[in-house]
Image (cartoon, rainbow, N blue to C red):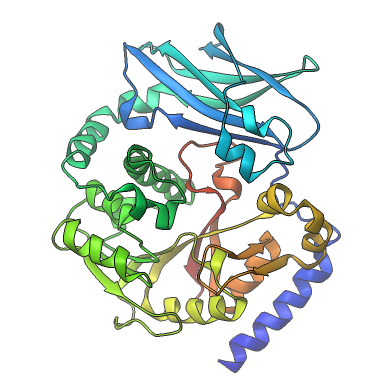
Length: 388
């Protein structure tokens, strides 16, 4: 243990002395884009589909419209002016945040390759922000339809239960995020040179009501799936409603899980480290190292620089200098206890615990390209593997 601690201190010192010079791994995108509808499994090929979402610019520009192109041909323009009260309240200092919504109906040509989304700013400049890949949807339509039918058979928690983990009460939005999760994780693993079919066992730390385990189950019901959470209400709901065979454990903070060594191919910590102290993060990494198969992987999401720019712009210089910030307004583990990691700080933290980064996806992007229905909102995604 002392060796790992000393290794962490050395790596952290090296990382912090170089952070001020350059941190090329950080994402400096100033446009935040997200679709509310449609998720990939509900796109109506050859029919009209309703699109809705929101887009804001962190910088000084104002967004006026979204232009849509089908295989390079402009087909429609939609204004960005629909009220988004929750977003406006969450980031009131961001220009036009309260009216950053858009909606339009669009016929989806099943023979098209992609639909490109382009932003128009008040100064007349334009910027392509997203491509909806129709070819991929067509290629995977059978699998998506199979999962959609299975998803329709699963019970969903009520709005108040959903609020405990998601911060909203929209049951349909909760449901619609399940299949996109497994689609995106497959993309992350493929980008890292891995096959999702090799994952035969998954441990989900902070599983809540089992949303993510439902995604793994829909993809392949023969996997061993285990979830744990400190919230007894959520674990009770999951035990009573999720498919038989998925194991759920109620655990306490700083208590070791009653699981064996080297017994999971994938361990997930999604929006977990974002609410734990640095000491707890170090302890949990050491424990996960023991539970993970030697060839297994750890999937972790962290609040990166984007969250500092959005919610704590007054602490931006501090974050750049230190690479790490904790806010301790409430007890550890609560949503009001927040942590924020730069890439270099996270890299040193993982390395000291015996992990190396197999894949890094800032704000959930793959090779700089945005994805929709990110697995943890705008958090940075890390895919780790054991170094020994």
